[in-house]
Amino acid sequence: MNLKRLVIFCLMVHFVYTGFSQVKQTEGQEPFPFSVHSLKNGLTVILSRDDNLPLVTVVCAYKVGSAYEKKGEAGMAHLLENLMFMGSRNVGPMQHIRFIHRIGGEFNAVTSWDRTLYYQTVSSNQLPLVLWLESDRMNSLNLEYSTVEETKNLLIETLKNQNKEDPFRESMLVFDRLLYPDFAYNHPIIGSEEDLKSITVKDVRNFYNTYYKPNNAVLCITGNIDEEDTLNLVRKYFSTIDPSKNVPPAPSFKGDFTQEKQEQISINEAITTPGFRLGYRICSPYSNDFYILSMIDYLLFSGESSRLYKRLVKRNKLALSMGGGIEKRRDLAAFKIFVLSNNEATKEIAKKALFSEINRLKSYLIPDRELIKIKNMYKSDYMENFYSPEKRALFLTQYYLSGNDIRDLRGELNKYLRINSSEIIGIMNRYFTENHVLVEMRGK
Image (cartoon, rainbow, N blue to C red):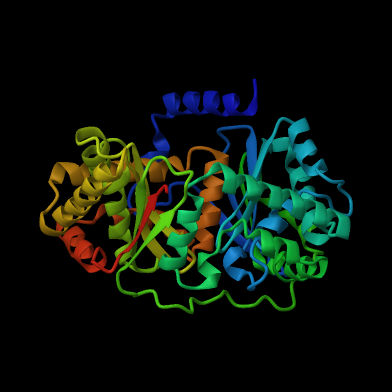
């Protein structure tokens, strides 16, 4: 039985015999136990024990992403993500991956605008191996010229294939440049071919030595662990790694995020299905308004019963496909909507129908039944983060990195569940104004 099937089977058995007991918490209680620690070199350690499965997940996250890149170095953070699997002092190229596969584990990595995460789920008795692997590449990554050049070439080839295979990619880049008028926020995470070619080994080493250090990292371990033994293992493998002497402050947005209405046409002869991208600049993810905007996200986009899907796809059949929602880029956020139609005529009708749905939310209270439904959907998705070691570890890591008070997970959920219909109308009128960004996509 592979790891995924084992997880699913154990979770089913657990839920049958506990009656989803983890969900039945009283207000003010946390949905699961956890603790936060700090080593002398600045490494933050989050531990959460869960004995339901004989598994453990380790997330090693660094507070750096594409927003931290300098002009001329677009793609640096993603390049380093890939280099982290190319060997270190005691581990050969790709050997990290082979170790995890050999013990039946699973791994992944992801780079965003303000963080880079590496995570793996293995049998709990393999925890020392994972900690050793993570500490070795944090302390002594292989950044030789040949390794860096080979990895750069692979990413450039990937980038070329993306440009060939996705006729809508160029419109996405145009859209982001209009929506986020600042290099730190509007360039693609994968970077550009020109910048990747110009990045030197010295550039990569400086980036690694600045950001890939314990005082700029979070290590989260969840699953079948003993807290004291796990802390001792963490100290054993990580406490001797020197911290960064100078971690620069997070980049601040230098553009104007309250610009007036902007519209542009993106033409690509490979496009056979016209469409459009629509964006609304909204408040910071750290604002209280963000809780209400998250409920609006569910109302408009969550599932086939969402308002926009029902109106554009199911009922009026104006769109072949559509999607969207809130996108967070460090301390900025935007509502982004993507619609593909059959032809230019239906595209224009779809655009009008979309604005009609937005205006309806600005003028009329949503029915109590609909509000209860989206709150239940949100709560279900929120609680699902707690049911496996991997989801719990990723949730705790992301929550901590977002600057939230990790001791108030239950209180955080209640902030969403207390939202009322009048607040939704107020927020719709505040942010969904005519100062939007619109990029129309069409072929020649």
